[in-house]
Image (tube, rainbow, N blue to C red; front, side, top):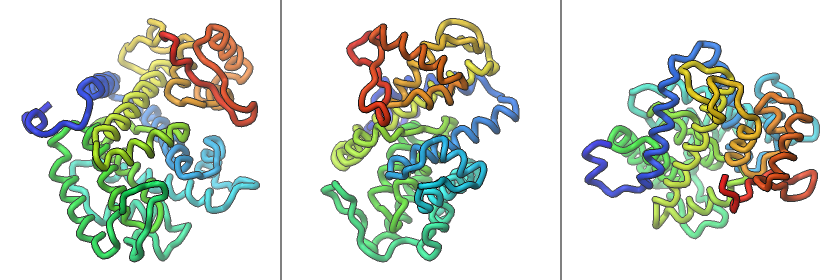
Length: 338
């Protein structure tokens, strides 16, 4: 941590920061990745971030449907065309953040372009343009920037971004960038999606992986963001925890898939093999409420095999299924010392 960080007010828990940095260093130690691995990881997060970010805003597409829409260009029967456009647009915006993942200063036009790519199929006239009317955030007690002040507030935001990117730890900086942007709310719609893209742009530029916020954590996400108007550390620590869990997921994927670097898998074996119970447990911790088909898809195992291991974990009282059969999912039993 640099001297500036030691002197200024800190908004991130030292323990969370240390864990995030340690995990980042473990990922870096596995580099360089083969070209095929880099491509597959980028596609993995392209689907994952598009699905989770849209789901937080009420998009009805499942992760599998999101994949079909983005990769195959197909619509999904019974799903609103608006939801399909959100998936396609977000995927384009995701691709764009990699063109910004350099040391060049961020510009206002970059942020407007992110919104244009996301929103142009929904409303081409408003895509990439700041709003001219007042908007209100449902459930929030705080006002966002009034329309006449948006341009000046965005100029200040971009200046803050460029002035502070290298003056504070990346997890803290990324969380504060998200927070500051969403408090301005410069666009008529899609501000949350763009905020999470800016968050992840900051992470990529700081050599972290993409951070995902599953929709089952929407309440904690929204609540911590609301509280951060007065106590920014609440939201910063929430984001730091998501950075940590997503990096753990990446390490699990690399180790289970035979990534280079000689890292040990969760059961102590070398590169791959892995204990399927522990891999499933890690997924449930990272994605509370995840369903058996999603677990099977992420681990590339059959549904029958996945369900067999889920039963073992349930019988051991490490996890439990909550909710109706159709809509419920698996959760860690918190009083278990796993």
